[in-house]
Image (cartoon, rainbow, N blue to C red; front, side, top):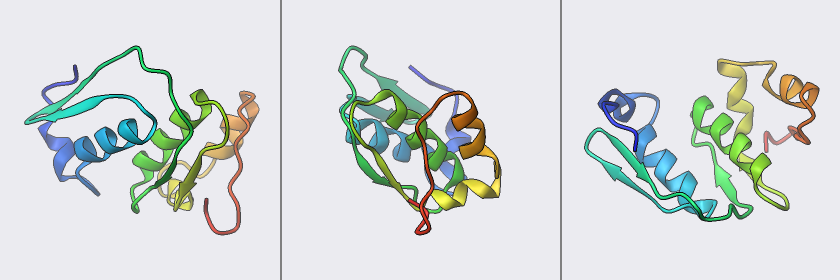
Length: 106
């Protein structure tokens, strides 16, 4: 359970709703609450194709979730990560992650 996070609903996007949607795309049951979310653990992650929706933190969250899922995950619009962390892909690769940014930003 994540609570006391109402401010996340009024950022670049409604990050509570976006994280719940991301988790759902990766096969993780989650539910939004007024001030956060509840995540039900235990489900294995599945690969997903998601859209960052012009939100750099959602893009990074999706990329990290994708690393934990089997197979290939695609994050459309991931080039938005450069807004807050231009070295994200390089740093993740330095840690051993198989992560790449194509010319379309996916």
